[in-house]
Image 1 (tube, rainbow, N blue to C red):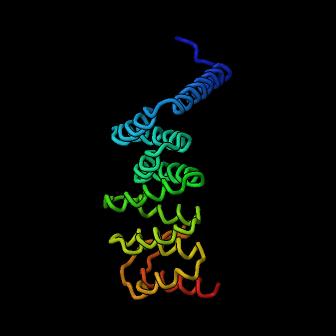
Image 2: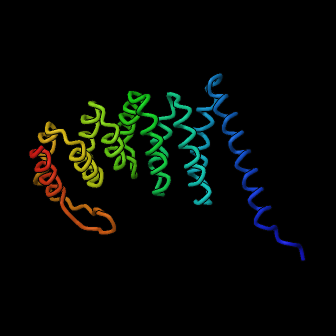
Length: 215
C-alpha cells in the first residue's frame, strides 16, 4: 500500500503549480505586445470552454479567460467578454462582468461598440440583463442611451435590469425614458438579498421615477 502524500508535500505541489501558472501567464501576456494571435487564441479558447461537456472545467476556464481578456485589451476582447457574460453559470458572469468593467475604465468606446453589436446580433441569454448594471457602474455619459436600448428589449428581465440600473445612476433626465413603461403589466421575478418576489415592470418604473424625481 503506497503512502499518502503529507500536507507539506501537497502544499509544495500547489505552490509549484501556482508558480508555473504565473510564469505561463506572464509569457502569454508578453506575446500580446508583438502578435495579434493571442486575441484569436483567447476567442477560440472561450468557444471551446463554453462547449465542454465537463461544465465545471468549462466554467473554470472561462473565469481564467475573463481575466486574461481584460489584461490583453485588444479590439476583439470586449466581444469575447460579452460572449462569456452570456454563460448560465453565475460565477462566470461575475468574472466576465468585472473584466468588462476593468476593460471599460481604459477603453470604454470599444466596450460600448461591442455592446451595440450585441444588440444587433439579437443575442438570447443572460448577458443583456447584466449589461445595464455594468454600464451603470462605469457611469459614462453615453451609458444612458445604451441602457435605454435595454428598456425596449422584448425580454422583461432585460427591461427590469435597465430600469433598476437607471435608478441606480440617479440621473433625473432618465425619467422621460421610464415614463412609457409606467403602465407595463409584464411580471418579473426579482431577488432582494435572500428574498425573491414578483412585481410588474410598471411598478418598477414608477418606483424608479419616484426615486429620480426626488433627487
